[in-house]
Length: 112
Length: 113
Image (cartoon, rainbow over all chains, first blue to last red; front, side):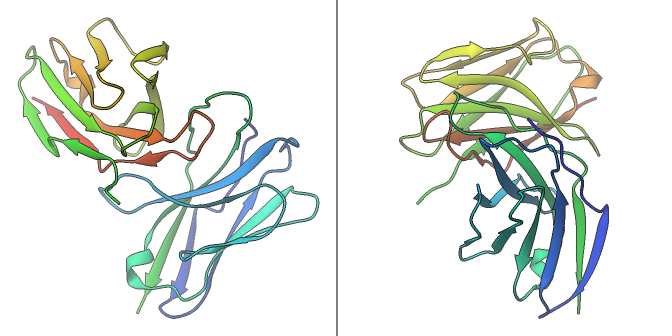
């Protein structure tokens, strides 16, 4: 699976949008972009994934650039409970199972 | 619906004892994964189940580690003769099929004294 690069930390004010970038310049055509987060002392939580098109669900939006070399996870109205480490990974979906490998992720701190 | 559940949430044991960790996947999920996460470290893959069979056990760190899955549902990870380096959070994940999104349980924090 392609590697990803994320900033180590970001701050966001409560109620504002949090925009978390991820670089995946070596992504291949059949690799999806996945985002998970891990709140302290909890298991990783799936957020969203996408291939080429932008995606939105109840938790977040995922914006993928046209060349697919980078993406941005958007939490539209961050709350204190969104403070967590956010992991961007890329993985193949159509060739059998694949295990997940998290990098260091981005520590998002949402402040009042 | 119910997510992945794991028990116990915390386990403290003495070096040399055996421990069993349990994972209840999301109902209907055929794929099940065990990972572990040491303090400040990333995810370390342990074993993958498809149904009751384990086609990939490559991540098990030693022969003290074993896992089984029965009825295509519940899985148990057993660590024999625990060592201090086994201390970690053990995470279970399941997915509807092998290629689908993996959903994690809350983990079992194992502390070996």
